View 1: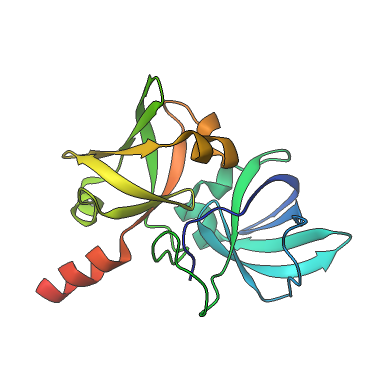
View 2: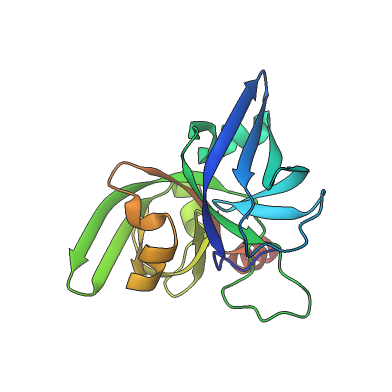
Length: 194
């Protein structure tokens, strides 16, 4: 379980591609103390398991399902990723409950920039829009955000300068794909209603 509060941005050091499996290698952030094999770390909002710790690097295996369902299939050496370690049970919940299980890949439809105001409009498949509600939560590339406007096939989110500076979202442009995890609570509430 994660909170959607990005702790570090790292570059991909290597990506070993095999049939139905990629091995992702990143440099371990200096702030990530005592990482262990088997630990869960969100990479652009995708929960991945540390499979190797060597030479100051972390490795993760990306199976076919992960590649098919996320933007990680587009990674290359030098790509940047938002990272977050799994939350501790006794820690503050700064964002919202994020599982690291991406619902879909969305697309940035529009970016509106005004002085001290940045709005991204994110296109999402219509069957998932039922889980996106105004003032609800959404994770985009692992970043916990509050939903603004909601339309038939897109929703808006807004960014403060700090978020644009300390995550990868500030480098994204119209047409770029992003990992979307809709609000876990909305899923359970709507599921309960049948």
